[in-house]
Image (cartoon, rainbow, N blue to C red):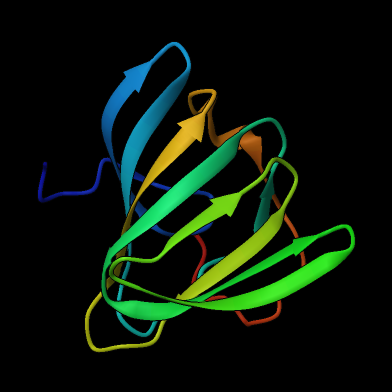
Length: 124
């Protein structure tokens, strides 16, 4: 895996693309220590994330459900299509995860900024 991020996601996290097939893609996401992402919702894709390191929180909101989950190495979460979500890194280390995106990521217009619960740290 490259030590330099290939992209900055619409939510502000660093992205390294790992693999892609017709049905989906795998990427590494990282949010620097003490940072908070921009809240977004995906229009056409859904994701599964597995956290590798760091610690923080993930907020998700669907039509009739809203929750904040503590995330750290070993935790898995899903982000169904249309789910509003935001995450923050709370420890001394970056919050890192690998995520499967289905279908593959179509481009920067996929994510729509939404109102989150935390103030984002910065904008891409």
